[in-house]
Structures are given as C-alpha cells and as structure tokens.
Image 1 (tube, rainbow, N blue to C red):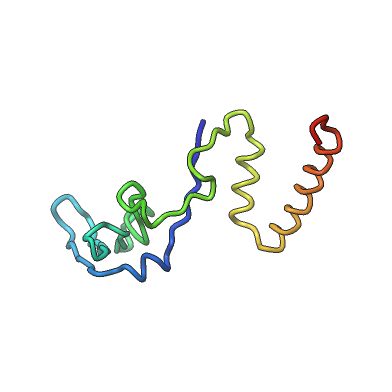
Image 2 (image 1 turned 60 degrees about the vertical axis):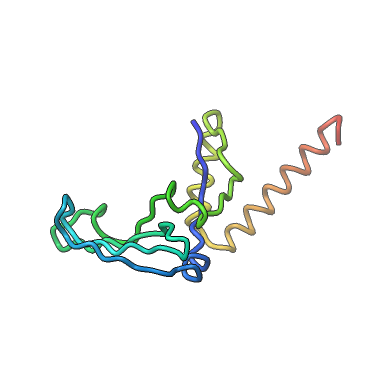
Length: 124
C-alpha cells in the first residue's frame, strides 16, 4: 500500500485567485457550486453549498487534487510505501491531529531512537 500526504497551500491559492464561477443546481448537480480559478484559468478549489438535505460530500470546501496539484505540497516527498509498517500510518494520522507541543515531544523520542540505532550500528 502507498500514500502521498499532501497539504493544501491556502496562502498560495488565495494569492493566485483570479476568477470565481457559480454553477446553479441542475445539469446533474443537486446543489450549487462555486469554483475558484487562477490567472492561468487552472482550477484551484470549489465550495459546495448543499442545504439541509445534502450529505457531507455535497457541501463545504473541496479540491480535486489531480486538477490542483500546483496548490499542494507533499510532506512525504511523493508516494511512500507503508504496507509493512501500519504503526507509521497510525503515527501520521495522530500527528496530523495533534499539537505542536506533541510534535516536539515525539521528535525528542524519535531522536533518542535514532541515536540508539547509531550506537548499536557498525556504521555509526
């Protein structure tokens, strides 16, 4: 299994925003959508306005990653394999939801482990 953890660059998107279009409900859409484009007419993101009958996929901020790739940064530097390390997946999921203080504490523990590996290595 592989993943690529991406972070949307909101500041860049805000800076490059040039045009907003509005699509009314109809033509296969149950709810209206605002789409945001940059100066090159490239898609940035969209906001879906679903009413009380809308499900979670029909409302809120959305982006189609493939169409807005220039507004994302990969924190894994591309696709990584995690099939042999489910603990890593759990670690990332928790790290993304935790505070900076928790990140600092985790880094201290990770650094201790790295140092121990160096001490025990014939290469260290």
